[in-house]
Amino acid sequence: MPTVPEWIEEYATVVGPEPDEISREMDAYAEREGFPTVGPAVGGWLTLLARMVDARRVFEFGSGYGYSAYWFARALPADSEVVLTEVDAEELDLARKYLSRGDFGATFHYEHGDAIEIIEAYDGPFDAVLIDNEKTRYREAFEAVREKIAPGGIVVADNAIAGGSIDADAVRGLLAGDREDADEMSAGIAAVIEALHEDPAFEASLLPVGEGVAVGYRVE
Image (cartoon, rainbow, N blue to C red; front, top):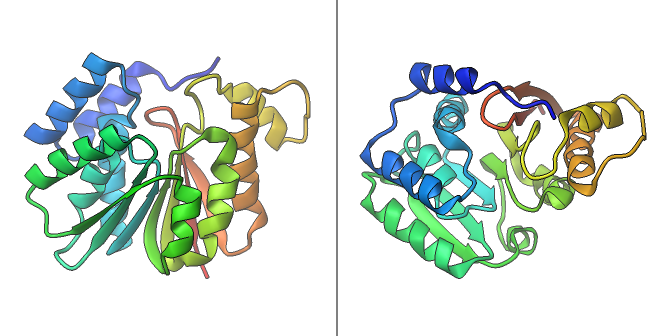
C-alpha cells in the first residue's frame, strides 16, 4: 500500500512553520495514546493555507482533541472563529484545554455530535474547511458544506493517500474508472475527489505530506 515516505514528512516538518511547545505536547499525547492526527507537516500546511486565503472562519468535520484546530488558529486574526465538531465528548473537552492555553484571539465553538448535522445550523461563508470525519462520509460532508465555502476559500480532506484501510492504488484506480475491488474507506476518498472534480466551482490538487491531503480551492 503506497504511503508518503517518512523522510518527506520529516523534511516538510523542518521546512514548515516551527511547532510550538503546546503543539509538541499534543504530538506527544498522540504518540502516547496512539491517536491519529494530521501531524506537524500537515499542521504547518494548515497554518500556511489559512494565511494564504486570509481565513477568518474555519469549520472542521472531525476535530479530535483540537490538533488541526490548533494549527489553523495560529494563522487567524483576533476577530476570527473556528468551529470544532467531535462525537467523543472527552476528546472535545481535551481540545478546550489545549486551545485555551494557546495565545489566540480567535473564538472557538465546540460542538458535540455529528458534524454533518451540525453544519446545517451554521451559515456560511467559511474560508477554510477540514474534512476528517468518517472516510465513507467524506463526499457527504463536502456536499453539506460546499455552498458555504467562500469564493477564494479552501476545503482540505485528510487521508487522501493512507490511513486505516485506505489503499492509494485502489483510490487511483477508482478515479481512472477502474471499478475493481476497493474497500469502503478507499471508495470514500475517491468519492470526495470525484465530487471536487465534478464541481466547476472548485479546482483541486494533492499535497503528498502526512497521509495525503486533497485540497480544493473555490474559484467562483
